[in-house]
Amino acid sequence: MKSELPHDLVRTLLAVVDEGTFDAAAAALHVTPSAVSQRIKALEQRTGRVLLTRTRPVQATESGQVVVRFGRQLARLEDDVCTALGLAEDEEGAEPASPSWLPIAVNADSLASWFVPALAPLARDARIHVDLRREDESHTTALLRAGEVMAAVTSSPHPVAGCSVRRLGAMVYLPVAAPQFAGRWLDGDPALLLSRAPVVCFDRRDELQDAFARRLTDGQDASPLRHYVPSSEGFIDAVTAGLGWGLVPRGQAEPRLRDGALVQFLPGRTAEVPLYWQQWRLDSPALAAVAAAVAAEAELALR
Image 1 (cartoon, rainbow, N blue to C red):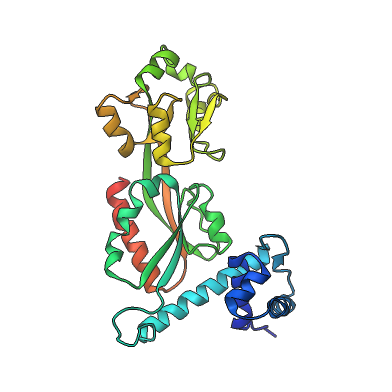
Image 2: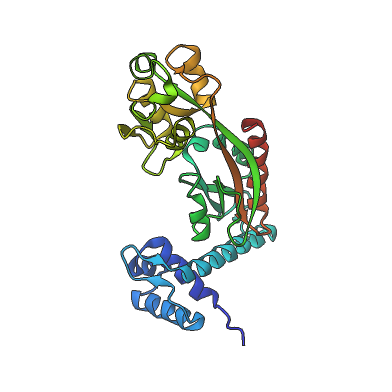
């Protein structure tokens, strides 16, 4: 016989995951920590699985992530039903009492360039609010899988279970450096010098520069002399300051190439990162509106 998952137990699991501790979840739910613990035990008994690791902060297990995704989808559908029935409006019916929150994972370069303009059409609908989580495009699917976000800009064309996928286009990166840096470190055959010249990377997960260097050499990574700058704006500033060479999105690089602050030391060479939109397979008007806005902007920005 199929076991049902009581909604109050699922909501309690969501509260624990979101708040990080049983005590914080109890405060958010206005119940005692003992009640929260009992509800989680009851849910684990119903599913026959351990759903949480009792760490600080609490983490959902692989089975717990499945229930978390279900809980967030249920909450999304409930919000959409309330909106459709007019139950989300205040007494005057002018403003929504509880907005539709949509957590979305976005890579830093998209966030710094085309993604925020994509959301402009949503400003007319006060019911839709986004909660953007910045993450590397090769890791955003992990947030989808864990149920932490409803949609993500990702470099993976392989859909997470329960998600649909749509190609958005590709971000084009140019290999650039400050003129003085290029003259000192890349004078000669730049392709042969990338393994020695200092390089700027976004963070320790950023493999873009290493992959680019490997394609131009006999498989060698970029130089171990590197700087980590985990900000799109800070990254290009670091390259412009001469800390190292780096791959910069074309839209951000072109103004500085025009004014001479940067040079493209390998003309004609680029790196492309394909981007995809993955989202839950959920009949949600709010999620559909965001997806349509993102796809429309990506068609212009990621040709």
